[in-house]
Length: 572
Image (cartoon, rainbow, N blue to C red):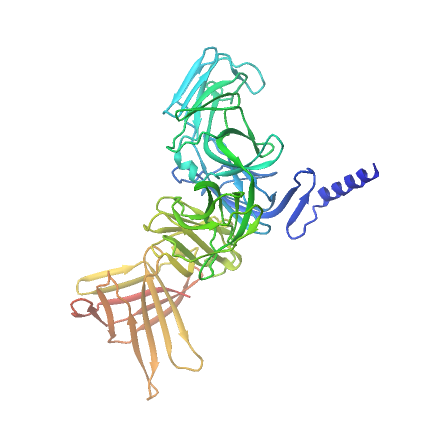
């Protein structure tokens, strides 16, 4: 008895103090197994099946609740989650509720993208009569008369409507393919979900969600050609965050059928004894792979899907003593890299260095500045390809950021910078797959920068221009590097050099890459440039006029004298 009292006092002290050690808390409220909580950060995006952001969605992690902003973005800082696996829950008006698994590490940052499916009610029925609901050769459901209950437990009377869930294939790319389930001996096993299914029933008059007091018959036609006959039906217990074995199920000619009162959060899958593989995923140049989709294949079938963290770490749960393959995928679920994992019966670590070029890997890093040139930024960045496969990344101290996406195509990348404190947004587009030291100015739309060229009936301009001045106290030489382009890109460059000569004078020299679709080059200065320095909206600017410049057609070698070569540039 005395020992029990001491244990109780120790547990109370543990719960009340939450003493942290290396961002880990272990709570022994269940002897088999103990629950291990870790302190970590989470962030994510909530979109519809077309990739459009869903604003004002409610996102819950443990006892913490937040809502998405206009970009579908949310974040949790210093949240405690189960080290084995945990869930976030998402609710949005007119969409099915969703739950998303989180695999995290202490003190790290994890990202999840959640796709919500819109509720589409296609039929209505009278509760006092038997009903048959058929949807698109996927669901066939038979409902007995007077089988529905209200939330207060009374028999429902009136008309009701049905919305089928998991009917859109776009959902499955973001759903985790591995969960945990308790078997009849309370042993935790890895659940690999092959198919998800469910329906929602509500009153037409009041919109109230309804449940079933009598079992209904459900026939589900599997949407894939390869069907496994040794699968079982499982139901997700939201309160206890665990999948449980549901009612028995029959399989016949590609159709699974069963009777149940639980009609939502169902999946058809298999269970395995499991172990854990963790490690760090990097490129050969040492760059970490951030928020990248990773999964393992057990016997050549997807068994567990997750994402790397911001530090490049990953968790993969795999079936014991089976053939397992680590796979790195694109945002469109295309395999980019695979590595066979050893057949193991216990947890192990495996750091992986990619020894291949990853197709469509886009990496952009740099800094974000306020209008006054300061780097005190509170916000995030969203990087997306043309197929609306977005990822979100944090803006770190001193405005630093590092983004990465294995996109679906080569059509270009959009970068959106969001300053959450000042409600300011800046968007850029780029076709360059790798950019380092990329500078984002949140007020760039408030200052006018320009590079303009006019000669031989040609007049062209670039909307973005910046300049760096390089000089040394021990040298009379000065170098001006102008970079310019459109759509937030700086694709062209002109270098002006003011160089001293032996007679204590100086002369100008310039070099320039091709521009106007690689058709022309600036070759030689005829007159010296004019410079003018000023400040606009807190940004230091320079205007530079080159009165006369020889321009050469790069193909015909024909030369022209310019009318205008002018730069209005942001000074860096």
